[in-house]
Image 1 (cartoon, helix red, strand yellow):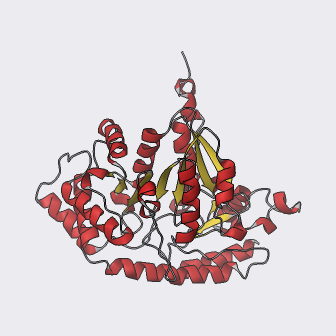
Image 2: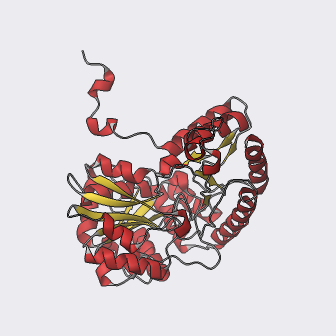
Image 3: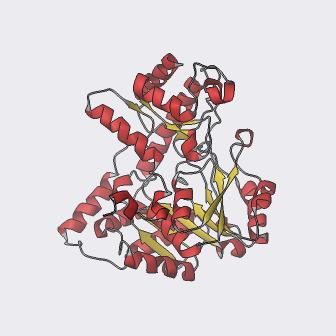
Length: 399
């Protein structure tokens, strides 16, 4: 009889577990053992879900709104999403061009299934969110990694995009603002990229999950807002996990031309059926209700960003760009890694350094290797100011 591992498909064997979740899991193990872990690995706000959103969910339960909904999502929610996209980006979507799903991660995978397959190449700028290459591999497509440079704020240029394209290139995945770097393309930079995208006739999956968490007056622009030519080739992906501290509620959505939404809906009808009915009612309240708690959260994140940057920049051999959005910093620790410096007693890779920090200093960070950028570490500052100071003191102690 075959052993269990031999029963697995080749495709799933070729994909590794999410590195960010693996680090978070080890941090939780240590915490369960009574270890005081400063956790900079988590990609979720540490703020409570707004009270009026929770109240809407409780009301939905009390009213018995606990059954299946339309696969695409309840009409009130798709209308609220259309209103928000129109207000923030100036792009009009009919509710029939919107799909609601249990999380933006689910939406991203549905888009990959609907758009890409064997033989297709898809551009993935690095540093990238860890699941982009894995999701492409799961549908048989080939991720083509284009490395963004720190001196260019980790953003790729039109020339770099053009050079990476071949006759097999079908699409590109953009994340703006970015996880893990917090960098973001402004309108002019995005316009320049979109000229290449249109010239090469590419499809864009635009992950905009952090578009409400931005700083210093920056306002991100969706590719779909840059003319009819871009709207017709863009899958706008967003959700409420980050903007409204609703990670566990699982609510994401896509806005795209109707044929693409229909294809993604077909997959969802055989996969998850629909997003949680109660969560959908809560999401309507989140989008249509007061946004004051979002404003407070972003203001706190800005304070934390500046605090962790000040500590990182005091560390010798460490450099760090200033994020325009999200709640991560992505400093270079190349000066502390043997692979880059040849110093015998230092860790060999960013994964080794991350392990050292976790096991010796009880500080959890995610190694840059997970994001396609060796030599860097990702710190999430979705934690209190006091924990940021404590964690950075521990990092300094190890260095």
